Length: 406
Image (tube, rainbow, N blue to C red; front, side):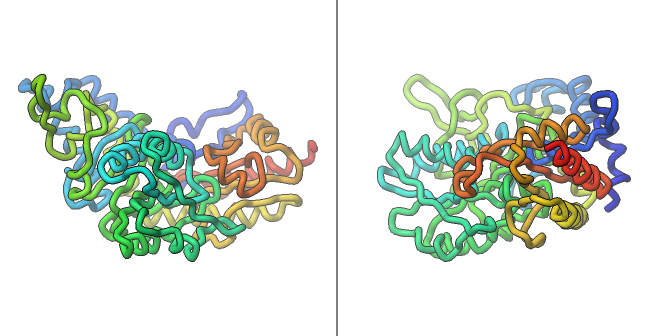
C-alpha cells in the first residue's frame, strides 16, 4: 500500500497550518480524517434520497430504507457476523458499551455479581460499569498489567469465580498501543461460561476483525475512527444473547405493538434502535468500510506496522525519550504515547502544533492507567493509512526542536 496514493482522497491533508506549515495529522486514535468518497455519498443522500426510514410507503422512504439496511449488511460482512440481526447501530463505541452494561446488568446481574475489566481500559469501559455498580451493587474486578503494558493473563484467570458474569476489555489500548490477546481472553472466559465484550474502537481501523473467528459475544466500534462520520457506531452481539436482553431505550421503531396496558418489542436489531436512526451516517459508515476493504485491511496493517516500527526507532534516538507500551511492534499497534525528559506533555503538544504537527495530549480518557504508570499524561502520536515516513521524520524533528527550547 502506498500512502501517497490515497492522500488525494483526503482534501484536509493539503491544509497549511498557521499559514506556514503543512499539516502533519497524527491524532488518528482520537478521530480519522474522511475521504471524499464518504462525504460525497452522504451529500448525495441528503440532496436526493432524504426521507425517514422504515415507516413510509413513498418512494424516497423506501429508497432511504434500502440504503440504510444495505449499510447494515455492509457492516455484517465487514465483521463476518452471522446475520444483520446481530448488527445494532449506535452513536459509537461509548453508547455500545453503555447499552451492553445496562441491558446485560438488568438481564443477568444482581448485587455482588462481578464484571472483569482491565487496567488499560478507556473510561467508557469503566464508568459504564460503575453506573451499574451504583444501580445494582455489582463489583468490578481488574486485570493488572505488566510494566511494559501487557495484560497479566495469569492474574486474569484468578479473577473468575461463581459471581463472574461478564468480561469487558479493549482489543487495543488507546494509550499503550498494546494489541491484547483477545482470543485467549475469550477462550478463558468461555471455559468459565462467561461472555465477553470487546471494545474494538482502536482495532477495527487497523486490522481485520472476524467476530465469528474471535468468538466474542459482543463487539463495539465507532465510525469516526475508521474514516466514517461522527455520531454513528456499531454493537455486534450474538443473536441468542441479544434476544435475552431488554431494550436500552423506548420509543418509536423499537416496538411491535403498544397499548396503555402493555408493549411488545420489535425483532432484532430494531429492539435496540429507538427513534429515527442516523440513516445518512450509516451510508457514510458503509462507504468508509468499503474504502478500507478495497485497500485491504492486511495492506493497511502492514503499512501502519512499518510506520510504527520506524517511528519507535527514530524516536528512541531522542535523548530523554520515554515511550510507553510494548517494545515489540508485533503487539504494538499504531499508537505511540511518549514523554521527553521533564517537558510537560501539554507544552510539547502545544509547541508541536505551532509546527503544524497534530498530536493528542493528556490522560486520553484512561486515568486509572496513568496512575498505574505513575504519570499525569502523555503526548500521543497515532497513525492511519495516509500517514508517511516523511511525517514521522517531521514529528521527530519537531520534538527535537521543542526539546532544544527547554
